[in-house]
Image 1 (spheres, rainbow, N blue to C red):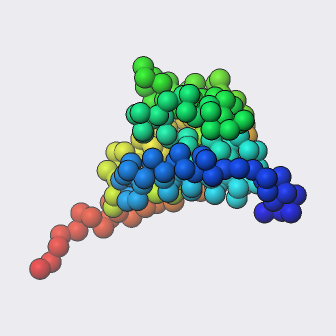
Image 2 (image 1 turned 180 degrees about the vertical axis):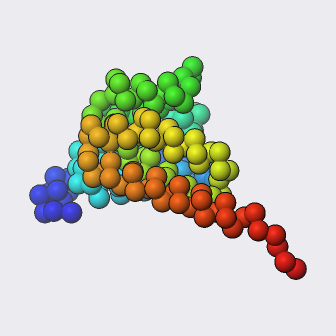
Length: 192
């Protein structure tokens, strides 16, 4: 982090958002751990890519809250602090709406999403792909996630951050390699 970036976020009050995100501790992830840790990974990815916008960083730690913690209200998010209404707007932008299919959701963000929504979705997907391992997830799920990433997330990254695009492409290559490797290993018969 550069000094000017540190200075830009030095006064940011994120603790109330972190407290709100603790509700995600109870939401388990298939890879182990919980959604609370995933939220921190998404925040870390954004900082790693030099994003210092307060609204974006605050939204990153609660980006899954509305989808994963059903008793979360819009009002409680919008009242967290002076950024609350804008944070809520961004969180809603990257949240899947009730009637939307996954494809409709990703298409909406790609075609209609704000720059910050696309950046946040790319950081979220980097975290998700990092956790995508063939010994934990079904091969079809991994293939579908890779296909969704190619179709919807790579074009977002191309629009917002070429370095994120490169990382996403690298993660896809590595996950495909892991799939090929696991296909060679798992069919082997166990010798007792």
